[in-house]
Length: 264
Image 1 (cartoon, rainbow, N blue to C red):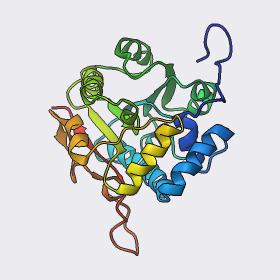
Image 2: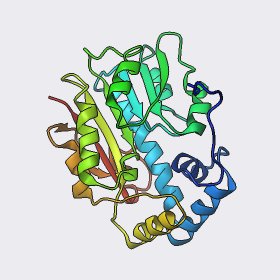
Image 3: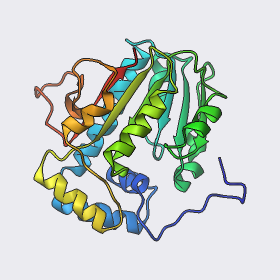
Image 4: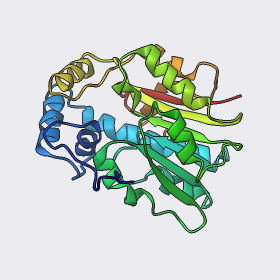
């Protein structure tokens, strides 16, 4: 987990996506520079906290579907971010105790906290790979210590591709990762969308503060599932992807879209 030169270096002078996100979710693993950007975004896009919570709930519901109805027992969670409640292995192993999960991230703070992602139940397994999401060779080699790539794997890409500006580059990354997986595997994905003026302004303020995030339209989000069989209800706002029943009817729209696709 750590670099060969010792503990990973954490730069507290520039904001980082994992720490800003942690701040919006109410965590404590962040620094003044992260909180400053987070507050500026919240000033112009007050719903960012609700949006972040809805995205986290989307992750839990998708893992629940994959480990439950879909019967997946292996998960590759890339760009996992900082540990919080209902991490992928916790949700999966509650449903299927034998689930095996590999987390991938290259943020030094996430690497430093990776031990918190390795507390697997006794029947399953977890591991952590320090790698960039575009480094498919390293991901495949290191993840194979825990995952059997001859059997279905659920690839989790949650809010990570917004850090890649170019659509062709982002699509190439996704296709390379999906290409590692056998038939019957799944892609679970979401990202921020340009579906309101306030989130567009929030992304602009965030970029000016040194925390770049590139929004896409729902149609551009849907392109990441090309060649896959979409699971109902398709690519939708995260809050309305198989929501838990509630007393208030349909959940509020959020400016992030996602879905699940199955590899034929």
